[in-house]
Image (cartoon, rainbow, N blue to C red; front, side, top):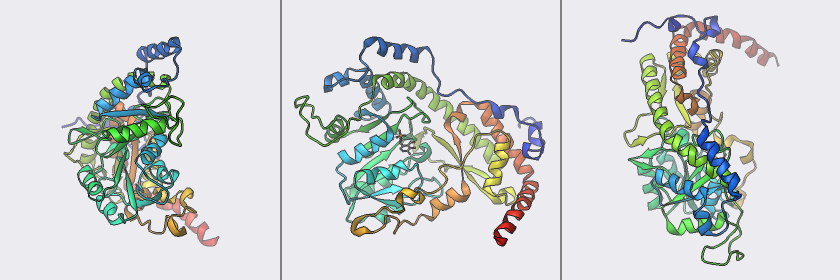
Length: 433
Ligand SMILES: Cc1ncc(COP(=O)(O)O)c(C=O)c1O
């Protein structure tokens, strides 16, 4: 039995209660020190600030060493570092053969890039709905959207929670679709003991500042296919081909090379990430247990096939009924008053972003014509709560979160009445306008 917790018995801050000390206990991020300084100075002194021109030079670079180590961590044969995660997705689709007018099934619940990568290479995005228990792209929804024009699936492991790779890899094989995993959120995640990113044809990661492995900017494409890896190399390097002359360009392509500065930082950050991933899993499990006891907030469904979970968001499902009908926005306001860093994800299903409003596919048809994603819309509007992965590095913060939820729940009827009262003038104003 836990000792009686006085903080929990008091009122929430929003009702005049005392602050919970742990609510301000942020873990430093990004974590860095002497190893990163040494690695960066090593690059500075070497005078070799780019990763080199020929394939051999590239492989023997600092970035090349990181690339190999990262591919090993995820259990794939090939890795190619690039400028960022957006470029990684675009590159994987281009190298995988997506052409103008091809339909690409994309998520509705993710960061916008999971869906814009396809039209960036001329493809037509087709939006799949989310599974209400896992928040991942639903295999049923994907299957229903496959037509003879479908060429690829961009499968995001949203928040770091692996999507159903059993069913979705089978679907991709059956319909001969290119499967690109968007693993920007899923550093270190494993499905059945094998890293995400190696289940489909290519796995794309981001090392942007907010990610669990950060270099400011950066990305990598992993693959187990020798043929695809060769194309990825070529398309990231201005269309060069390994066996041909350095000034022979064979494909219309960008320069997407990563610098040695990023490779140096990432080599050290990877060592930390391996330890941090386990620490985050332990604290997430602790928070999940506490929240199960309290009730009203549920973590994403547990799945024994997820053998390691990298976190971008720790996602919670909010049940307003368990909080006397308190709307999610007022629950969030109460948590914010406690000083807790919690959000509601990206705010809306991807296709509701203005970029898609005028976007058209074959025959001038709007890409929104068949976009029907009631689950993703509901999760975005009412249910989803997100806590950033760095919070999972602070046990006091995790405990403070659970304490705050417990006392907010104890005072939910008062908070709900207050929220109704506050909503009245707004409703009146609307009527008279
Ligand atoms: C799911 C997802 N995919 C792709 C990206 C793109 O990564 P980058 O910012 O490195 O371009 C992000 C970035 O935040 C992301 O969250």
